[in-house]
Length: 115
Figure (cartoon, helix red, strand yellow):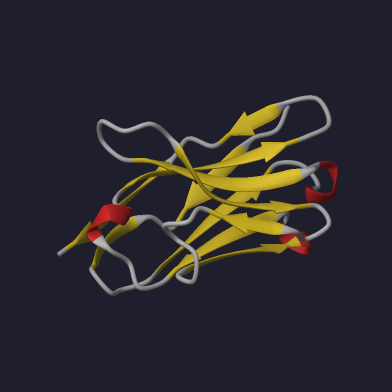
């Protein structure tokens, strides 16, 4: 069983920055891929970014050039640095972790960007 704890959400003005963290209860080396998704009110959950165990990354089109995913192996934690935030970035952000056998989700953290 893998537990994921997110932190770092909050309220920020448009153009501002936030950094989200996702801490795993297991070694990050047991996780094949780590990601961030978001869900805006009334919309489906969408991919924000993923990073694999080999360091490969991909980003949703709407966040390319503004968001950056990174990880700290020693802390079993990965991060989402969000810059140049826009009101349309508002939503609940979830991290996830894909192990060899199962996909796990965090509880979500609210990000609200005011105009």
